[in-house]
Structure formats: C-alpha cells, structure tokens
Amino acid sequence: MSRSLFITGTGTDVGKTYVTGLIVKKMKEAGLNIAYYKAAMSGNVRDENGNLIPGDAVSVKETSGISQTVESMCPYVYENAWSPHLASKVEGNPVRMDEVKKGYAMLCEKYDYITMEGSGGILCPIRFDDEKIWLEDIIKELDMPCIIIADAGLGTINSVILTVEYMRSRKIKIKGIIFNNYHQGNLMEEDNIKMCEYMTGVKVIASVSENDTELNISSGKLKELFEENFV
Figure 1: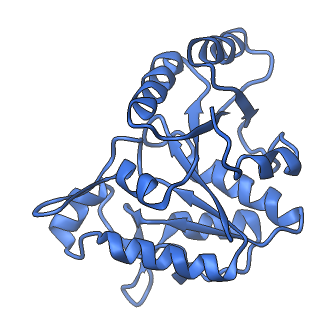
Figure 2 (figure 1 turned 90 degrees about the horizontal axis):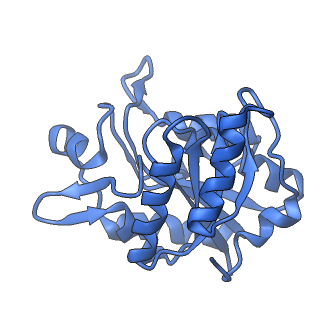
C-alpha cells in the first residue's frame, strides 16, 4: 500500500515546488520508490508545438532525478497563472475529482510513496461552477497527511498560524512546517520559527535556504512524515 504526503503552503510563491523537489530527491536518494503528483497546475508555457508544459512537474523531475513520466504527474494543466477554478473557466477542462483520484490510484499501483503538491494556499479554489472543489476536498478525498511550506521572513507568524488553525478546523492532518528562504543566524527568522512552534504546537521540521540542493532532514525522519500519526 502506498504512503502519501500532501504539500500545501501559506500562500502562492512560498516555494512549494522547490521544497517538494528536495523532498522527492531525498527520498529517491534513500532508495525509495517515490512519485510526484499535482491535481492542477496553472501558469504554464507552451512548447514549439503549442502543447502546455507542466512547469512544476518538470522542475520536480529535474531536481529529484526521478524517472517518472511528466505526463503522469498532473491531469490538469492550464496556461493562465490564475487559480485553477478561474483558469478552467477561461480555458475549459475543469477539474474532475474522479480524474484526480484515477491518476493518483495509477501511481499507487507503481510507487510506494506519493508526494502530492497543492495549488496555491490551503484555501485555493480548484473548481467553482456547477460543481465546487476546494483544495481541502482533494486532501480529504485522498486522506493525506500534510506539511506546510512557509516563507521564513516577515509576516510568516500570522500566515502560519492562520493556515494551521484553518486546517485544524477542517480536521486536516498536519505533520510539520518547513521554512523556505531561510537565512541562518537571522534574528527575526530564528524568532519566527520559535513563535510559530509555540503558537501552533507544530514542529518546524526543516529550513531551506536559497539555492539549497539538499533538505536538512534525514531520510528516516522524512519517511516518518508519510505515516499515519499526526499533530
């Protein structure tokens, strides 16, 4: 049976894809059979043939070195850099939960570990027409524990606490926090870690600096995040 972990963030552009790539890389280097998945990607460019290139999937594949095909990584790819609900209104092909589950199930047949990245922050609307799907609906449907990616800088205390409290109110399992754009020795960022842990009771399990190529957490500890126990 595959074990999975969902990567969400305190907002857009906090580095979810970058950190996810490092997670997948660490797991692969530990000899684990791991795959990457994302329900919907927005803000993608087209190749010379006019086909959309799923940029986040390509980035994770290049960072991690996994052999998984890009085509299996994301069922819904949009050009406009908007939330999936709006991009699909303009471009068509709205997200269907059964297709997301089908793609996930196919990966579970081939891989022991699945790392799934969310779109935007935890409140991202995925579809909003005659059918309504929010990011949290996908997390719950697939029954995944989560980690939260946050920027280490100014304002993160507020965004981390609000994200954690919202997820807890929706009974979403939280396994830890990873800070991105971290500067070792920075007084404010060190205090942000301390305050976020104190206010939420959730452990900051790793910190990532600009251009890091390794995640500062052991593969053994990383594997534990895929287990059922949660904060």
